[in-house]
Length: 110
Length: 119
Image 1 (cartoon, helix red, strand yellow):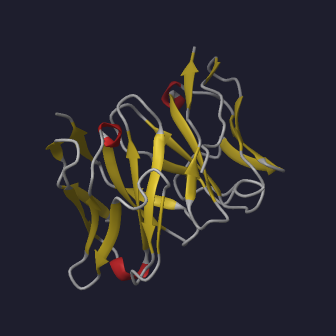
Image 2 (cartoon, rainbow over the protein chains, first blue to last red):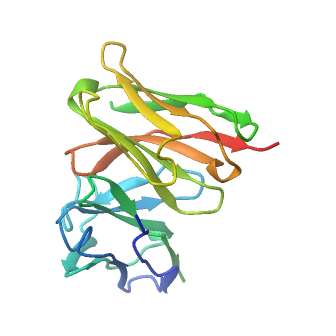
């Protein structure tokens, strides 16, 4: 049950686009299209932003998009805004019927 | 509206036990698998356990297997996490979360309850 690998931090200026990667194995990210992404503000509970690799829950901005290639999933945020500054976590269902999270990525909007 | 409210956190000595509860409202609890996820201070999210809709199937992270037990009472609308043989590394905020699909889509989360394991 090793954590998925995410960059510790990414940054971008308002209006720019950024991409956060999430690398696992064929037993998790590569094995299922069950990758989710969560946003977490300091002191708050996580919020679901993307599920099933690329689907957005109702109410989530279409500036966020998800994709997957092999064992690596990605979250792209376009048109960066100040409100996007937060921690982002990926997660994946696994072949052991468990869940695994990534280590988290701190997004800074410059 | 969907709400999840955790309770039962506190300060406990290493080796002792603690039982967390999660009270759901705003949805039919018995239709959904439920998870516990924890977050150590200043650290990332760590998945802890999942329980199926009827409680017949449970799965655990290796770090808690054999020490923690997830359970549910659909008649009383409650979810529990029994934590035994607690270690200092179990110190974290514990969240309960609803699984929208049975494949790990955590669409609603509680606000969390803090467990501190310290002598």
